[in-house]
Every structure is written in C-alpha cells, then in structure tokens.
Length: 351
Image 1 (cartoon, rainbow, N blue to C red):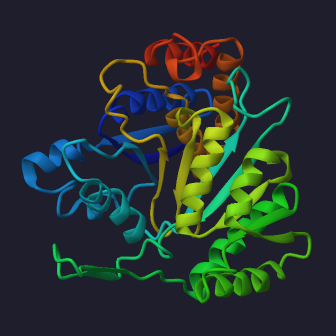
Image 2 (spheres, rainbow, N blue to C red):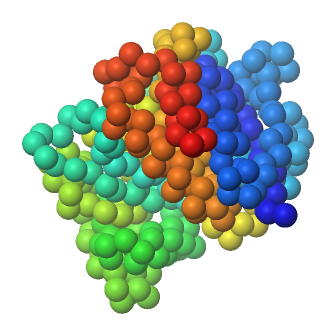
C-alpha cells in the first residue's frame, strides 16, 4: 500500500474555481500510477464566504487545516471587497499561523510559450522570498484619518532568525543547482534593514563553501532579469523585493498564467500551501479561458514536497509537452479553453 496524503483544497475566488479542479484532476491521474492516494478536503472559503459570514474563513479554519499534509489554493480577490480584506483574511493568516516562511517561485521559459525576451535568451530562475516578516509586517497605523496632516506609518521588521533561515534555504537550493546565489538588496538607500540583510546573508552563505553570493541592488537586478536572465539562477529576497521580482520573472517567462508558487514550512511542523500566482482575474472569470498551467504546476510542486518527485517530474513533462505541441490558452496567444488544455494534459498522463 502506497503513501496517503490529506490535502485541503480552497478554490477561492474567480478563476481559482476553474483552475483548481484542473490541478486536482491531474494529481489524481498520477496517484494510481505512482502508488499514492490523496484525500481532498474541500473548503468553500473566500469572498462568497465573507459575504455570508463576514469572514474569509471560519473562526476555527486554521485549526481545521492544521493536520493536513498540504493546502492547495486557487486564488483570492474580488472586485467588490478591498484587497486588504481578502488577502489578510485568508492567505496571510495561513502563511503566518503555519510559519510558511519560504515563498518559492520558479520561473522558466517553457516550450511553445512566447516570451518577450529578445533573440534566444532563456530564463530559468528560482526566487526564494522571505514570506512572513520584512516589509509586510502588521506593525504600523494611521493617524488623523481624513485630515490634511494625516500620517501613515508602516514598520519593516527584519530579524536575524528570519533573514538567516531564508538565506540558508536559498543557499541549500543553490548547491543543488549551479552554486550561484544572488541576494536582492537596497543597502545604498535603506540605511538600517538592508545593510542588516546583507550582513546576515553573507554570514549565512559562508556556511556553504560551494555557493558564491552576489549582492545586487534590486533596481539593477530587475533590469538584469530582463536584459541578462541567463546570468541568474537562485535569487533570495525580502518579502517585498521577492514579491516584485518573482512577478517580473513570470512576465519575462511569458505569462503570470504559467507561474506557480509554494509557501513552505520546511521543517514540516505545519502544512505548506501551494498556489498559482495569477490572482482571481475577475475580467475572465466564468468564461472558461483561464490558463491552468500555473495551478497544475503548483500541484506538481506540492507532489514534490509530499515526497513524490517522480510524479512531479511526470506532471511537468506532460504540461510541457502539451505546450510544445501548440495547445495554448488565450493569454499565450492560443485558442484552447481551460478544459481543452486540461484534457490534453490528462490524456498524456493516462497513456
């Protein structure tokens, strides 16, 4: 009898409800072939839940998921509800309660996917983003709301523990790839937190003699993603810088529709969460044209985390082959529907 896993599924909002079933179907197609089983626990949480209850997830929602092996999320966001309500009501509490301090964002040029890169330039980069502190702290507030002298204060929080553990994860990943690690910084302009980031990153990478660390200012690094993408392999960055750089890398790869991510608790003391990064895309929700690649790839990242690397490789090869054959959704210049593309991947997986 093979391994068995429990996974909480939160399709969420917009196209999340369309691409999440594509991901679960692909994972299910691999289960028997690779001798494992998945128990999916469906959670109808998100903006509709907020409209009926005033909360994005139940009061005990985190407790309900605490014993899961993983969480698969579709998307969060609705045009009628402020983003700070939807995001801080669902995704952020999950990341922080379950100490998912690594946000892993792979981006690479895929076969059959048109990229804005000139000539024969290729991209294959993994952004390791610190995921629970940094610029996205909860510390701050607003004073004298609505007045001419209104003030808003937001504190960025960088701890030695936080910087060292994300850098250590990135350095370990670099040892498994090219040995090259780039650290995103802005220590020429941000006088306290960024020099601290540089110092702790340098000390941490010294524990990995096979890794070379290059410190690059984030504005120059953004230009390098576009102009010299093949010079990058693993990038470690703070919460804000990692968020921006990983979206830029996804756009350079061709589309946010092919960008997955993992929110990891590497020690596995809590469940990790896997999601596409394209958002709820309300402009195309319900039209059946959403690109399921990112969600399917996120499912592959989940399988790798669960200890099923062969199944993950099979899944990545399958959607890559379908793209190479020319089956593409509208965002990639094709005409395939969400169902068309998913069916093509499933056909390959079932051969």
